Image (cartoon, rainbow, N blue to C red):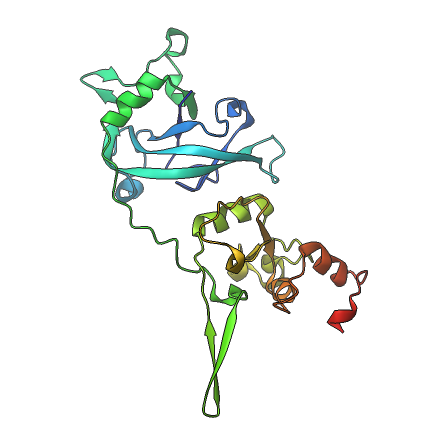
Length: 270
């Protein structure tokens, strides 16, 4: 059954439009993997957000699908994150009411507090009715730019020009949304040595961390569906460099963790 997910202009929830949806456990049964969802915003209460909205009035502004759902490791209340897939924003707002009638069917028992629910199940007919009023926005995808040149370890090609040696870095397509999802799932502390940039350097380094592909993307044969929970991991710059120290012998995170703790020895590294 489709659903509506509300995203507020100001909120305690760590939502990232089109990438992650953060929600309380009471909605877990509604937001299962594969659920089609409509993005919704309520009435604007702060004019500072006017330029970030399609309308000041309550409206639907996009459509997507729920991917994997993960526990929020920082929550003591069982809050969750849902990975958002296939987000398509609308060109213009679709109002929640047309000719005085709401597009969503409001059960009589919820008449007084229906719109307070951040997540709402809707039937397929309502979902399709709202979509027929939507105009998908043309998207210019900028997911092919590496997010951090320091992370380009995978491949190097060396050529010579006279006495100079030139390094040509082969860059591979990366998706910023996957990086964001991986950080939300794994956190900003290095999973090999535990290093926290913010604790070491203060506010300037808050949120900084490298995201490592467990399998190098240079080994992908074309496009590959990447799971941010199992295919990506967060590492500090040092541990990330050690993982890629020798291109012909990529280390696992567990191996680097053991090396850091002094319990793993490999003759070839001598």
